[in-house]
Amino acid sequence: MREKSTVKIIAIVAFIIALIFFAYLAYISKAWSYLSKDPKACINCHVMNTQYATWQHSAHGNAGITCVECHLPTDGFVKKYTAKAIDGWNHTVAFTMNTYKHAIEMSDDGARRVQENCISCHASITSTLVNNADNYHNFDQPYVENGRKCWDCHKGTPHGKVRGITTTPHNLGVKEVK
Image: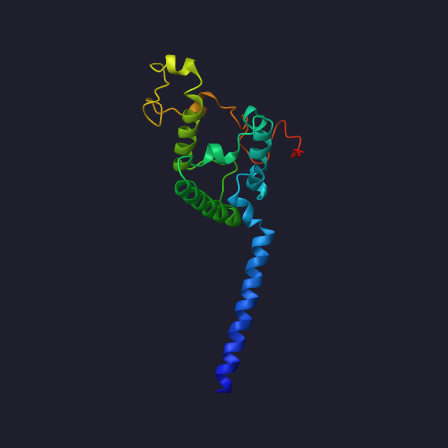
């Protein structure tokens, strides 16, 4: 009888220690920030500083367009948080295991989402694109008909031309918005 009581106490203590350790890890990794649309969540990991700095000094950054609005599905809560969970897992593995490339690239699914969001935001307000639909801007498909994506021509939008994690022109540091 006393043996079962000791095992029970040890199990409870181990569970409490594991819970405290989990809470501490969630705190130091700023885990709750990933549920927000705050762009600073993207720089919790130092690897994304270049992307953040170039976005911050862009027209999208100055207009308050966040990472979430470009990089995640905008057509539903479930799709958005499913993509966020998958991307978060992939980023965690890549950054923890140091398996990312010097020039960070989007996944095919990420590129598809960004393309759809570019078209969604800009097609209705840019009459020039609609008028030139026969010249590379066919919005009947998620990708332009010849396979090109918006950023094939608009390379500097919104992250500038530099893709390397160690080179960031115009990086004046993370500016605090007050």
